[in-house]
Length: 311
Image (cartoon, rainbow, N blue to C red):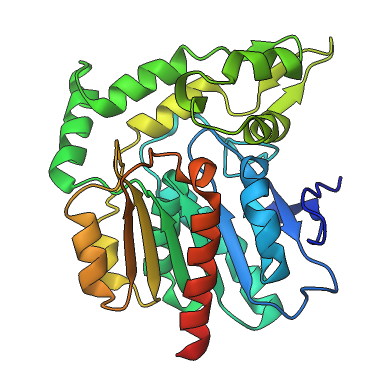
């Protein structure tokens, strides 16, 4: 299936890669027009999928060869996703390392990692563990939570009580409607509401296309099960702050002015680690920066690539 959006840009093509215990589905923007371009992988947020970001990424396909995956438990990827056994995001880090390792061997060059929210956190952790595979980091409001807050979430989980933001989000995810009669009904239900309030309708439609599966009776259900999305909010057994000290690649951070998931001291730690880093706080932005300010993200991706090329 081709998923072209922008005239003059390479068409995105749905592909799959066989992993240890299933297949990773991804969209690739690659043809003869950008075969010699640097590589960029993009990792989505919790509950989303690769196609959610295609209107962000398609124009960049003129300058990058791009892959965007469906993470474990999301989209068309078939890796096991058991909410009852989910404790941390290291599983995503390790999935991502295996996924980009083969690509780096194929091209003979490391990959720029971009990611939004959970996708930014897993990209950072992957870059810290395997710096040889990563030439740059584009972090878009990554989930970087101070360790004391993470410990509170873990304690709340052990005690089985409420009262933390992670659990508020988890409870909301568990209540999410998972089945719809058709895409048009979903689009009407989402447009202008909840998390989708600030999204262009075209991006909501892309999220629906990439994030639903058709049932035998023709109805649609969410590919990312509400229980798995909720488990991701609760699975805070990882440390996404400490790996900052192990980063080797140049980086750019774009984070939200309101409701950011990139909390102090993370921006300052990233800035101290890479004195040439772009650390951009967008005061008018919510957590959904790629939907609200796609041109800014594209500009920052190109600026980061220019800095890498000039080094």
